[in-house]
Length: 452
Ligand SMILES: [Zn+2]
Image (cartoon, rainbow, N blue to C red):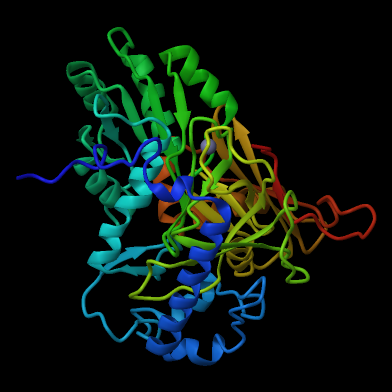
């Protein structure tokens, strides 16, 4: 006899009973999970023995004394450099890349069991925004190049009970257009800019006979203006995100029908989630933005404790009108030094490092994210070291830098090639031309012109 599909296994009115458990019981259960996880990490990974010495089980904030893990901490602990973060119990795994630049991809490892366990947060998220057995779903998530998302979302969609169309991000728009029409595909899921690009391409091919009601995006914001465009041109009724997470950690949040843009229910049975002010290390109260630190309980092959995901967020005090008891948080964009361009996270240090290789350029650099005609644009501005650089030299340098910065970032390069983001724009300026904070005189290094 075949197993029940994931949709039929839902414990109504929501996907599972955790979503309706009262908050006190959730907190007790979550604390138990955390204690067990910390003990597991301490006993199976020597790296954590000393690092977790400050864990205080009975404290209100039990991880407060533990150093947050960062992306650069992980690299020397993981293959190909070392196996220091691997627990002693596991022998086989799948290697995914967690972004990064050419030459040395950052890796993240998942065991088979961990990949299977992604079915729960995946189906919980898709269920909460209204995926049903009637839906015909085009999966446009990223695949190949050690990308992770398509693989586990495909796995979930196969078992969910819907009709699954595994296109990935590599299928030509005219083919997607044809299949969408022939099979009556009514739901698109994928990275926001890929969906947008595909649907915009379909407009040129003719939208007669198409009926796309649901757009389930992830990986980046789908801005209000773009949402309105899809609603107007295609008559899309529901635009939501089934999940927010990172490949270094796990799924952290999911939306429901009632969540506005950027607001998520926490997967607080999957992760221990903290929002912390990075300046003083204090936990932020409700409504106060801070950096997100995540401890994902299912990650056993490489335990991950207090990972700083680089995004800012705040807890919301209201409970959701959907009736779910899982707490709400709002994403506030990337941390101070990172801009999300398409689905690449470009950090200020990467740009600085490239520019430092060129003579005649100062370290006074500003990066800005703009949104132009529905696509992201990264602008890099740098001051020269001398006042009188020739316009010839400046023009040549500008083109060289644009090529060099793009060359080092595979996913950005691909997005530019597919015209889902604009090519990088470099501006070379005279000394002192960049804007400074009028009070402190400090350079304004990173500007995110988008308030999503
Ligand atoms: Zn809700």
